[in-house]
Amino acid sequence: QAIAEFQGVEPSVVERHCYWHAGQAGVRHLFRVVAGLESLVLGEDQIVRQAKEAYDWALAQRFAGPLLNPLFQRAFSVGKDVRTDTALGKHKLSIASVAVDLARHIHGDLSDARLLVLGAGEMAELAVTYLMEHGVRHIGIVNRNQDRALAIAERSGAQVHPWAELSAALVSHDIVVSSTAAPHHVVSESDVRAAMHRGSRRGRSLLFIDLAVPRDIDPRVAHLPDVYLYNIDHLESVVAQNRKLRTEEVAAAEAVVDAHVRDYSASHRPGQSVLLARVSSFFQDIVAAEEVRLAAKLGVTDRAELRYGLERVANKLQHQILAYLRENAGNPQAEETVKGLLGMAADELKKSG
Image (spheres, rainbow, N blue to C red):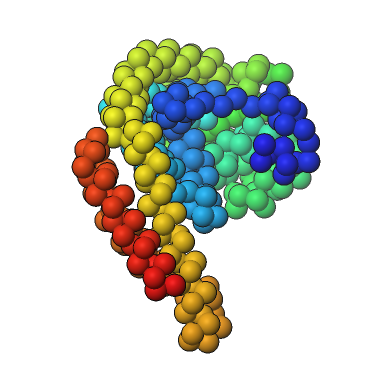
């Protein structure tokens, strides 16, 4: 209803594009989302950041109270447990991430590795961006079209080498990512053999990641000492295997979610949730009333600062009551005690008001 009103459309229009869950089903859905079980890329962890951003926004807008606060805090714990106790998110599912893993396996710390990119198309620029995000600092670009290479260099700080200097560039770089549109090999076995025998190159491994179709790198270079070659088919094979491994972890991840759903549902019964909401509402009413009273009495002009101070005090008191209720979940006497305290406090407020 709120979304429909905000967009100025009939509720039926929104309903066709939405789904919702209530009660324990809603709890389970949120836990599965944060765990990465509802993601298109199974187990991806970007959803955790997105959920935290949504939660922080709700807090800032005062939309998150005693119902949403503990629910989201538990959801973040679920996400952490799934990623710690299972291998759901430990196998890379993108070509770029697999390539980075290969580079790290061969060269270790990428901050000292020198990257050479052959080509200046979209794939080449994506490779530059992704490897920079993962520590690569020294980047060279070789492309027949200098203007396109210079455009990427301007955005990334890379150094552009003339195509005629490709052989020399092989000597000074450690990782070569190639994605040209050439119809033939642009790096031959003899090119690489010559580069590996240069004095400054000896003892240093050279990794080729060939993303081009047809291939840019002569496959025979893989037989040379200290030379490693992976093409797009190799990377896609690793991704497919990793996807299979992630799928095998779903049952373990679901078990973690189930355990949290049972525990959360047991400690947050519907009746208690109503009481938690009542506690929060009680303190919000106090803050609002005292803000008006003190502003008038003291002549306060900065109402925001006054409200901030009142809310800090109220939150500290509220936290103690909520913690007491959670520690005594399912104890009717504890709930009656809190209800009694709220009633007594409300009576006192009426007398003093």
